[in-house]
Length: 431
Image 1 (cartoon, helix red, strand yellow):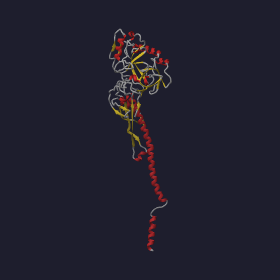
Image 2 (cartoon, rainbow, N blue to C red):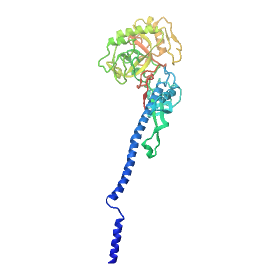
Image 3 (cartoon, helix red, strand yellow):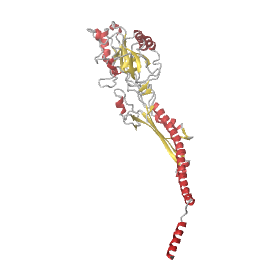
């Protein structure tokens, strides 16, 4: 009996040592509230400090973008003949002119180099050597690290790191932030108003050799049944062939009146537009006195199966030298050239000399001229005068003989398109 009572007393005593009801729940609530408060502060730090860091990062990115674009735009000298060694400094100058939350942007690095679309990588290269664009495809140049075509800029906030607010509770006093941008300058893609000179469009195949590469050593004549080029009025996304009156008004004018976009159709026409040709012939005589090449930038079009008109897709732009224009074919003795300046091979050089031939007979003069400047017919044979078969020879009525331009010239247009020897003027951000 006594033992039983003792056990009961101990059991009651044990129960009284553990709080029950509201007292026990009150302690648990304090623990949960502490955890919730800590999580709330963490979320606040994430929201407020994260938002603050996002603003700073975005401003650093804007500065990096602006610096890279400015550097890339000045990557080459105006005539494209040399790399501008001050492009990196220009990139830095523009980048640091920006602010991030009232603090001056710091530039970790600004460097020129090569951007490859194939590998999606930037390779720094301080070289000042200019890679020859001629005779190389865009794909080949894309994999050539010596082709300087981009500027990389990295901005940061290290000396003045981004301030932490709620993050201090979690042990973060401040945050370092950085941003990176790569701007690429390639070949003229979108052509700005007045980038082109004459309303003549060249077929892409007429500028390529048998390997499919741009070749500045081979000339052609146009138009030749639409297999080398045709006339255009520079109008895009408009149905129907180019109007003859519109074409004539554009000859020796201000060039294309509106921006042209690569990959879009442009109005063209096959065959000869006599009024436009006469205006071009008169302009050529006045501009050159028939003794020097007539340099111009022309649009390049895709001519499937040698077909020109009523519309062809614009695929590029190219500089060419018009070497000769024949108005009437029946007076070769009087109309064949006697002399012609040889085009310079680079921007800084002058003409290396003059071709001349004083033979009173036009056929020998013409054939010597054609051989000197390698003027070819569409089949690849030289455009020589054939006395036995004059209807199918290289001396033809109302024909323009041209050679691609191997000299440097001013960049033009927006970056894009294929390499036809014309560097772009306006870069694009690629990374």
